[in-house]
Image 1: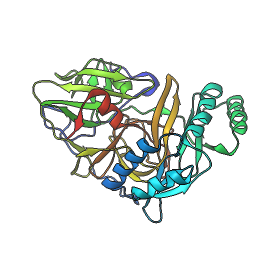
Image 2: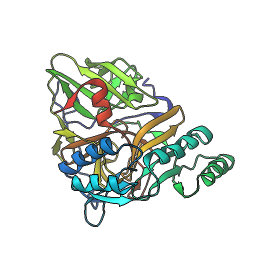
Image 3: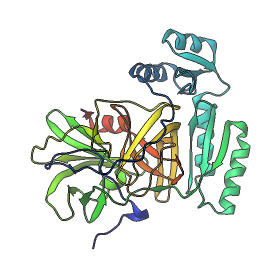
Image 4: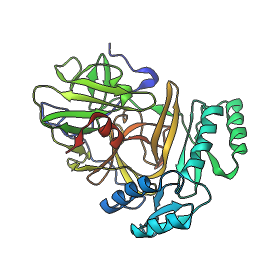
Length: 355
């Protein structure tokens, strides 16, 4: 009998792969959704990354895309930093709190309110730590969270969300290992070797993976990290050379040619075997999620819809890979809370690249 991972961890295979790799079939078309957020350009990804390095945690509190104009807005704490931002072609916005100050607020939450069913991260557009609390919190836990938040003043805000934060693993085109069923996100390479990256709560479960239950091995785990992070990597066996694209669930596929860190306010898509392709907007970065079996850090929160079976899926924008789906508190209508592990961190950890 197939076992299920703790907390019903189940993932969805998203990449279009030939027979030697993962699922080559197609699925029915997803229902079209309005495109939220604004499109990030390659230049904006580059400028965002550059200014994040040069300004550091004291001179800025992060960046976001203006929903009306599409401009990259970079928060700054003084005029000298503002001049640096203008020199890079972005728009500065003077704010009260730096990343360092917002991180201090998150440290307080970590020390005094690390409660299963909560998450928090930085929203540069409001210069706050945005806290979410799911429906699993007891009245006592919610009161504790509110007491701690009250002590932090207007540096934080709390929002209740439906459902409960969980790793979403449950079905669809699957990869199998150790009796568990999971999913893949992006195909990656190092020299001539080919791998796929997926959620770490999957690769924790088994060392070898197959495309069918009980089938021959298609790859072997070479790394895994969960909790704290949520990424893992599996090396394809037998010289397989699968394509580097994402299943759009309408008979077509999106080629992936680059990777970047998501920017608050930008539009993203999530491809997963349960909810197929859904759209959303990035709402927070540097997010901590307190799952039942441990926290993960430096994640990204979006409004994309997801459900059990989407874990390990791809978060992307056009041809740019952004993240590996980790979990959510569920979805109401078209408003979800999908969390992703930034893919660049995983690529750097394993010395691989998308292609």
